[in-house]
Image 1: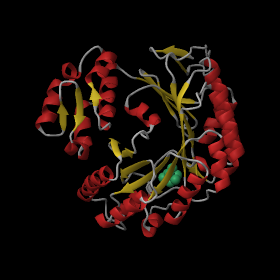
Image 2: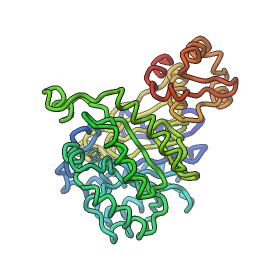
Image 3: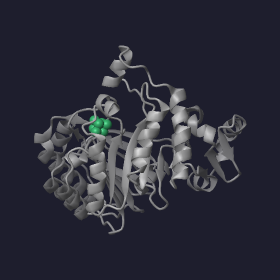
Image 4: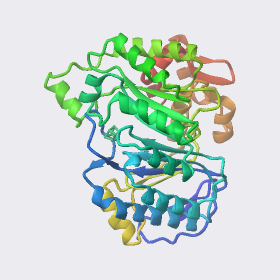
Length: 403
Ligand code: SF4
């Protein structure tokens, strides 16, 4: 490894694949992501880096993950973690002893103050109180449940492996296990979904009183079962106007219910915005472990090998499991910081941009910003650039202009 930029995050050396990995403590605490690429089966809309039917690989995968994490921690001088996010996939498929092994590796590799946010994603189906108590006792203090819909037919064709009853039960068990920070993920804009049905889903989710809600518009990704169904005419394509209407209603309803809209697709009770995800939107460094995980130093990002078997083989051979390294030129960094910053409802402070690049937003993007303001998509008050409510509906219309 060599280090790069001001962060001092160790970079993997790809050429020989064997290091050296000199200790170089990062200059600031790191957001840590761990990817668990396993699911019971693939949901119809999902194009994530996940694999079904790999239960017998769980043990070797966690051993490889532990090794990758410890190797990084050793090279970086046991840096401080600011957040930990265990995502997937379905991390809650892992038995508790394997999760314990993962946490052991994390604590050996990172200094982690007891109050940092530790999130874990879980599917409502198949959870038990004992399991959630075990997860909580490992230090997980934020549980993110993939609920998606309260409508049985929608859950069926989305190919979710749970009912809404299971989601209600999961939230009750999470509370009983001591979780005081629960997120619920929902999807809207489904093919043929009437507004009233989305409203019923959101109301049912609100009745569970989560601290955090994520609501994503469905996108039909190539290669998914859903894409095939739409192509074959078995389902209509999602209607963007209907999705926009749902989004507008969602914003109003969640504001009335006391949730703060802090990112385009995310709402939280005051004090419960996701600290880990804000690191991504603020364009700050993070390190990712596991198959297909991304890391980012501020000037470079790299991605691990995507397939778990190839990832395991590489780690077991004592080599960095890195598939590609992407150095980011200054223009790209600027554009990415603006685009990600605009996802935050508060927008991007000129001062933050200037302190990173030595130039202000207007110097770099004056004509683009002026055009967006004229179109009513963005607002600029001399200190901060943010999307207008209309711009939030048409984010992509805004983002491409910075690329
Ligand atoms: S549970 Fe999540 S990650 Fe797994 S297949 Fe479904 S959408 Fe994809």
